[in-house]
Image (spheres, rainbow, N blue to C red):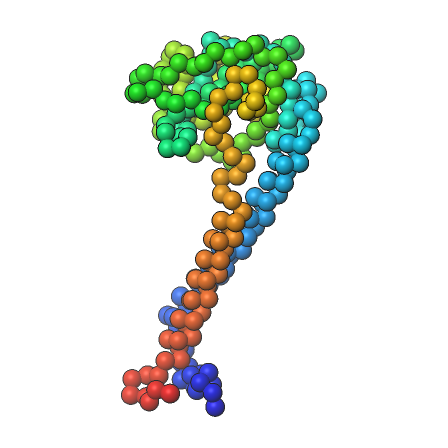
Length: 248
C-alpha cells in the first residue's frame, strides 16, 4: 500500500476547513481565468493597433462618429484655438510630474475636435502653470483616434482656475467645449492624438496597453498556483493523523 493510500485512510471531514476551501477555490480559479481573458483582450487590442497603424490616414470629415474608430489614423485640417488650452492633470513621464496638453481645433465644417499634443512638464509649483509651446497652423496633420475605455480615475478635485491654460482632472469634451466658448457646436466625442512626427507634437507618454499580455499570464499563473497550494493544504490537514495515531 503506497503512501497516498495510507494517507487517505486517515481522512476526516472538517467542515470549517472544507467550507473555507469551497469558498476560496472558485474565487482563486476565477481570478486566474479572468487574467487569461484579460491577456486575450490585450493581445487583440495590440493587434488592432498594429493593423490600424498600417492604414493610410483617413480625412476627418469622412469619419463615421458612431463607428469603432480606436487608433484609426486621421488627417485633420482646421484652426487651432491656442487661447483655450486645457492641461490634463496627473500625468507623469519618466518619474516627472506634468500634464497632457489638449486644445480645441475648429474644422472647416465648424466641428470642434480636441487634439492631444502630448506631455508637458509641470511648473515649479501648482500656482505656476507651464507655458504651452505655440502650435503651428493645423493643416493636414496626421493624428489617431483615442476612444477612452471606462470611467476615468480621478486623483483629486477639479482645480478652480478661471484663466488659461485650464487644468482638468478628466477628459469631458462636451464640458471642455462649453468652457472654451463653443456652445452649440458639434463636438467630436473622442480625442485625436497628434502623431509624434507632426509639427507641434510634444513628448508622448501614452501606450497601447497599460499592462502587457505577458504580465496578465504571469498573474494568472500566480492565482492558479495559489489554487493548487490551497488544495494541497486541504489534503494535508484533512489526512493528517490525529493525536495518538501512529504516523505512516
